[in-house]
Length: 139
Length: 357
Image 1 (cartoon, rainbow over the protein chains, first blue to last red):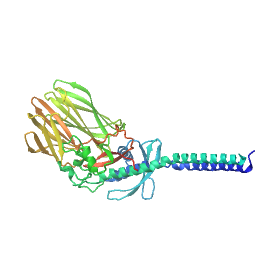
Image 2 (cartoon, rainbow over the protein chains, first blue to last red; image 1 turned 135 degrees about the vertical axis):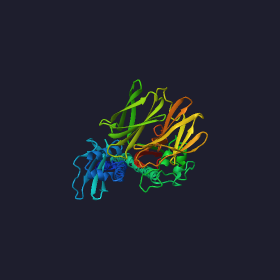
Image 3 (cartoon, rainbow over the protein chains, first blue to last red; image 1 turned 120 degrees about the horizontal axis):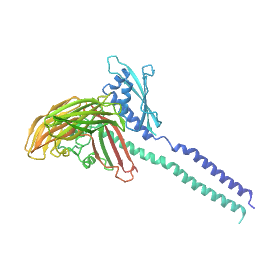
Image 4 (cartoon, one colour; image 1 turned 180 degrees about the vertical axis):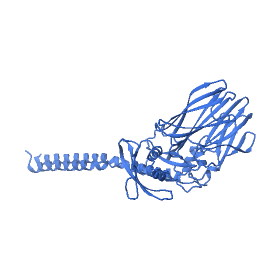
């Protein structure tokens, strides 16, 4: 017959197993962190596209004239394939300006990033616009 | 053996199994994160290399225009520009293997200064243009060719304004049109039957809403003559430093016209110098957000020819072929929008190398 001391040690061992495994189960989700590399790449692509579009004042002109179709077409051509985006323009009072949606797809993207860009028009009547560009890789 | 010893033995065994399985599980759980951390270090390094290539001018800063100079340090940025991601037309042209002054991949690899990294550079227009001959209608005095032009990006149609030029011998004619919402456009070209030889149809396309986004396509066909020979059969056209260097393949060749085309303009090129087998022409610095297409027409014995080259010489691809490599190392690619002579292009750089220790 086993004595009480031995039984306690076995129970202790099983308790230790349950503690260790529950610790592992709880920490497992931490290892699947968002893919920062892909998000960083998206952020760089988005910023570069907005800077290029704003280089000669095109971005400001399109916003001033409310030519949202043209803005969408330019974004479609400048962004690489496989990237979904949604662009919103805000005025100085942070009121939404674009009357039409400026995006390329209703499909879901993964690991979205948001870029905020300040655009200053190059016209004689200077206006400031805040552009919020949401980007994601197509799933 | 006392019962307490059996209990202790059993408990110890369970503990050992527990510790071992915990070690294995921990290692398996953390391995992806560790690998990601190591890979991220490589990606950051490759990203810095790509940016260095695009934001630096190289040494000497004007190495692109000095045809016979191999730079001490590689950089593609325009030496006269203060804007980021503005590339030099000649530095880009010297990456194209068709240019007589081009740098080989092994030279580029040595100049990059990173011996453990292989790379590839691809430069192209932001959308594609393709031309197809649909039909030919022959009349008594002339022949009409119907072409279909298609503008697309990744399979999606592109709305664009088109400007086409037809060049044959000393005949030049231009047409304007635009693509419909499905990206297609039809072009009718009527040529007199008195004309014969190789004909070049050049088409430039500007995105409807952004004049900096330009694409082009060149279609060669024969009119009242045998099938045209491949481009560069009769001449070698090497543009550099706004000079077109023409090298003739046959001594009997006679030049009829040498022209430069952009979306908005076309001019005859002015001869700068001539020797037995070569002629140099000055290329004007046109203020047009468009690639330049250089066309030469001529006669070799009884047959006429028409050949062309672009300036900057894009599209181009140079570097390691990662599709065929199987070294197990991860390949990372970066896409950037760059400006060359006011027009926008896409440059994709691909990088691969030994994993970080």
